[in-house]
Image 1 (tube, helix red, strand yellow):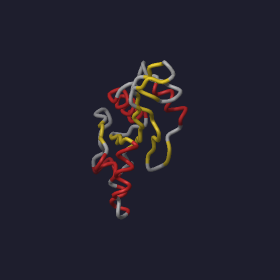
Image 2 (spheres, rainbow, N blue to C red):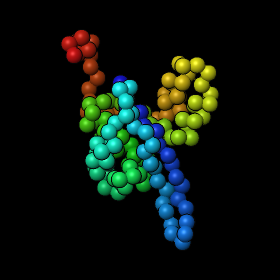
Image 3 (cartoon, rainbow, N blue to C red):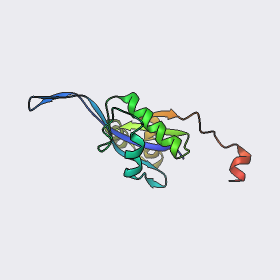
Length: 128
C-alpha cells in the first residue's frame, strides 16, 4: 500500500514589490485507506527546517521528497509516489478506463523508496 502525494509547483515571482521563491506545496497526501491527518503532516514536516509547516510548503523538490520519506517512515510504508498537479491532470485526461486511471501515479509520477521499511516476505504476509 504505497502512499500517494499530489503537489503543486509554484515558480518564483515578484508580486507587490516582494520576491517569492519557488515552492512545492502539498495538495493531497493519502493512502488507499484515506487522507493522512493534516496535523500529523504538519508535525512531521518539522523534520525539514526550511519548510512552511503550517502551509506544508517546501523550497525544493528534495525537501518535499525528504518529507514524503519521513511520513512513509512514520507510517511504516516503504513507497511514496509523488506527482505534480499538472502531471496528474495530464494522466487523468489520457485515462480511458479504470486501470489506466489507477496507473497515473506509476506512469507520470515519481517513486521514492524508504529503505528502512522492509518488504514483507511470503511468511510475513501470512502471519500479519
